[in-house]
Image (cartoon, rainbow, N blue to C red):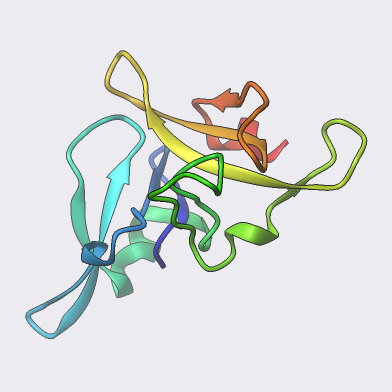
Length: 129
């Protein structure tokens, strides 16, 4: 669940942060912290209720940094499987969530290593195209 992207039924997207504290046990139910792209505060959502608000989930694809050599780099379970052929070659692509100046969140993607200028996406559908 950590590092997953959620497509919200109400529009927009959200993500489950990479921190272990994003999965908690509350009153016998496993809950996850969900941060919406709108910049609104994070919410703890019971895992069994995710289907009520999300129309889709892309599990475990986020990384903490575009460059894996960053000192505090962490990645979700499937982050290394994200690939792109943007420049004509099949290469590992890192996805990270970053805050925008207006308080909303955006997705950034770049070839592994973080040396390229990252592509930025406010909308999850644009990233998936």
